[in-house]
Length: 253
Image (cartoon, rainbow, N blue to C red; front, side):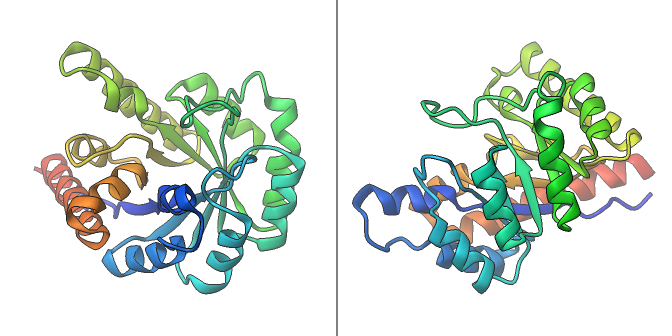
C-alpha cells in the first residue's frame, strides 16, 4: 500500500509576535510565508486573534493577495471574524477556542456543548466555499459532533502528546491521537494535526496514516533563530517525509 502524501502547513503567527515586540515592519510575516513556500510548505496558517496580539488585519490582506499557497485562517467563532473570513475567502478556516488571557491555545473546541453556537459559522463559511476545520481534542465524541455539524476537516490537538513525559503517559496520548485519526476517516472527515510539534516529536505523528496535514509554527520560528527559517522548514519537511515513507513501507511489508 502506497503511503499518502503528508502536507505541511507553516504557521507564521510568531514572526508577527517578534515584529510587534518593537512595532514597525520587521520581521515581515509575508516574507516568512514566501520563505516557507520555497522551503517545501504546502500551505500557510495564520491566526487572527480578537486581541490582534500577533497577526494583524493588514497581514491577512497581504497574505490573501500576495501568497500563492492555500491560506488557512485560524479564527474564533465570532461575528467579526466571520465577516473577515467571508471578505477574504481563504482556502480554509479553522475554528479554534480563544481566551483573552491564554498564552497559546489551551485545548480543542468543545463541539458537543457548543454545537448550536458553532453550527451557523460552519454553514456560513461552507456556503462561501471555504473549507471548514475544527480544532479538537482527540476525542470520539468531539469527532462525531464535528461530522454532524458539517465540518470538512478536523485538526487534532497534539499538545498533550508533545508535552507528556516519555513513557506510559506519552504512549497513551499517542494511542488517543492514532485512534482519533482513524475515527475521523471513518466519519468522512479529513484529519489534520498540530500544536507543539518539534523535530523530536513529529515522526510518530507523521507516521499515523490517516493524518493528511500537520500545522507547525512556534517551534519553526524559534528554531529559525539558530538555523534560519528555510533550513528549519526543510528539516521538518524531510523528517515528515521520511517517517511517512517508512510507515508506508512497514504496512506494505
